[in-house]
Amino acid sequence: MTPTTGLDAVIFDYNGVIGLQPTRSQWLRLARTASWPDDDLTGFQRAFWSAHEPYDAGQLSDMAYWARVLGSHPGPRLLHELLSADTDMWTGTDERVLAVLHRVRRTGLPMVLLSNAPRHLSEVLDTHHWQQLMTRTLYSARLELCKPDPAAYHHALAAIGARNPERVLFVDDRADNCHAARSLGLTALHYTGRPADLEAALLPTA
Image (cartoon, rainbow, N blue to C red; front, side, top):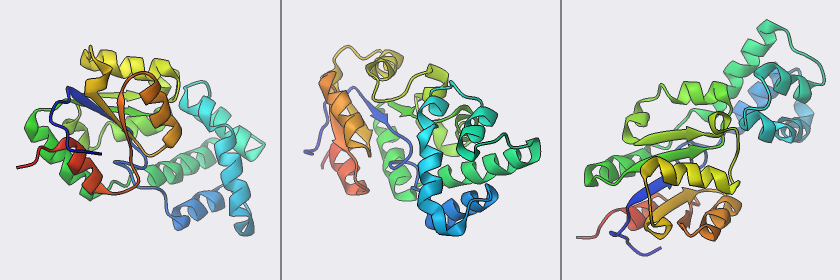
């Protein structure tokens, strides 16, 4: 993407952009907490994701979500352990990306977070220091809808008062979310783990 200085705002995804993807050891820790067989991590991940969209959209409680994953209701103690291991997977951040965001903040460009995240994770993320970089933070569980639903993007545009979507850059690691943004007139960057791409898109050249 060519360097852009005519943007009115930028909308960031969290996981896969600011947030690091979970490691295999983190997945294994969660699977073992759930008493899932070590030799069936793929099966656990399939169960984990199978009900995650309604969980992200605020339609399932923590208990209801994990009951679907496990096939039975966990007790309060196990639920606490599952939430702790789950949260640990999604709270690591890419310091290279945050360094770019600090530089963008100094330019005065408004930044909005638009993340598909369940309520308990959003509450943890709200406590993190990098939140001060954001003008607004929007989470699917609070909006009660997930990307790539067009309404999610409209909420983000409204949050920054954007009148011209073409002057708003949307950054996400998922191609389908970027495609949805482009269909609404936004400029989109499909992020593939290269902070240099963010620099080129968001920071004016000398």
